[in-house]
Amino acid sequence: MLLDVRVNEQFDRFKVEDPFLSDMANVPYVEFVEHEEESVAKVPAAEKVRIVCAKEGSARYVGEILVNHGFKDVRYLEGGIKTWGNMLAPKLVASDDSYKLFQFIRPGKASCSYGLISNAELEDDLVILPGHYMDWSEADPSQIFSDTLGNIKSKNSDIYSISTETEFIGFIKDNMRLQPKVYAEIRKVNAGLLEVDAEKQEIMDLGKNECAASAQNAP
Image (cartoon, rainbow, N blue to C red; front, side):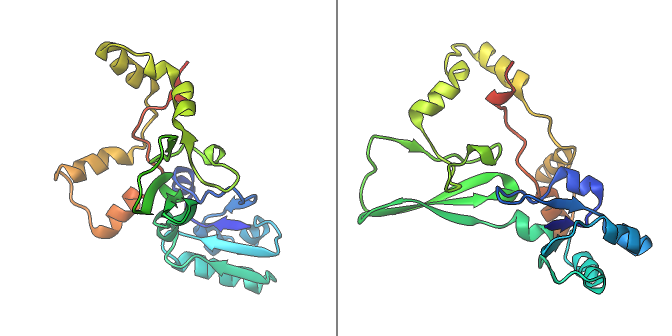
């Protein structure tokens, strides 16, 4: 069971996501400080409890409370939610005697990057590895994100059938996802119009990328 003790607003904007995570609760740290008994009662009984907070200290504090109330296997995420946001999970996509291809999944950003060790050219039967993904349902049973070029063209036929710039701009505007409010501040930082310290920059950068259009939003 994963217990997130950040404030509700932070939890709603960005949280730990995993295809195997079945039980999660959000009980803010301040509630444990002000109403300890009631807050402990909100934590589902579980054999294992893992706690995450913004920086680490609050999770450690809540962990001690849970242990004092009889919870046995309690641990917290060192470094807080930033540790999750910056985590890279390597997956071996394919290999033979001539090459190895890795996908590096960054769940906190719903993004993917790749590493190829090879002295040979890839074949024409092209498998596309994305830079981002919408959710875990797009992964295969091994939790690797990939698809063939043919499938991608079929799923995005509305995009590939666009023939004019005006139609393309209209499609993008109609299918832009709502961006988090923090993006306005990020643009100011990038333009040199707003100064924030390094820790604030890391916090602002957490969360999935919501800066692109999605064909899944099309009517």
